[in-house]
Length: 470
Picture 1: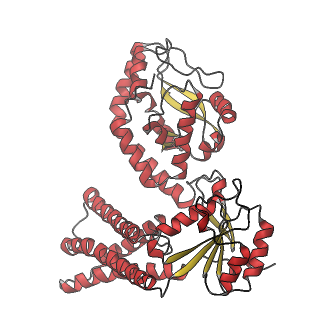
Picture 2: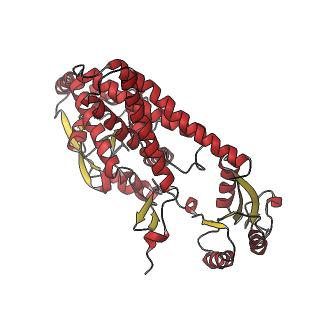
């Protein structure tokens, strides 16, 4: 068997490694130069600050995918990424200084200068290198003539991206396609963009009129793809096979490398590896702070429930957790009749006679959900994630809504993107649940730690009072 690890390798890996090395050198040299210019002694704490800053910057830049191919991202996007990554480090250092108030083991003036000058230098070198590359490409020294084989929906999407990437040095030649023009076989509105078929493509490639070819045929066209590649092997063009992943309903798609064998995930949880650790750390730290703040209000709520109606203060409901496993969700009791969620569950509706007067207030303000922070502490829930539904509702909607069970790729949450967007409370019609699921899956696709923080902040200010909650 062929050694695929030698055949398939990351593109621009060496350039990205060099970029990381230069960035680390700028961070370090700036601090060393400042200490020298200000005629200060190099203290051990400076070494620790430098080490932490370089590690954090490498982590943030990798998480934000700053070190991508320079043809893939605009200069403004790269500048913003570099600046925001360093700003995050400054915020962390300032937070440590504010909360821990360490003894003055270092010169604050030199550190503040370091905070200010480092991003200027980082952004400057990234900008200069990008502008130099752009000059080379604008003069044609590094420009590439690009063609697309396959007038498909995927090809149209690729062409739009190529045309919008003025900084990349791509000169679009046109589409090539052997398929007939009638019907919906071609997705090109301007047929003038189609320059011919595979024979014309190969001829131009041999004559040097094309440098790069992107193949955008569907996966079913394996025979035609192999035939084209066989003919292109007699040229010197660079050929790329675009995977038609847009025909799939991707959920948190990412590449996986298995000793050189590339694979792309179709359905995957975003909370794996280090991302899972960081989300769990956010859950625990925020939950402990919130529980300390709401301990007294929870005591008053418990007294109000006990005095206003008979029954326990807190009850448990069966819900689906991550992976579809059954979990117990804790809530303050708001009804005179409780249902654990195992049998037929009737959703609370406007004017529901089962809801107590005090329970109505709790549900309207979402205060009945506060005990779920204990669920977060023990690890069965997260602060942010899709809201857990009753078991019977899960069994019904999993057959009624396409992709419903994919929401269980992550832990259920106390709040979520769907709730912030207004999809909270009764779902008396299927369209409301479909809207909720749409945002649940969008949350999984676009998850980041910053999105969790943003949703927590929004919930604190606007999420506790909702007219749709009964």
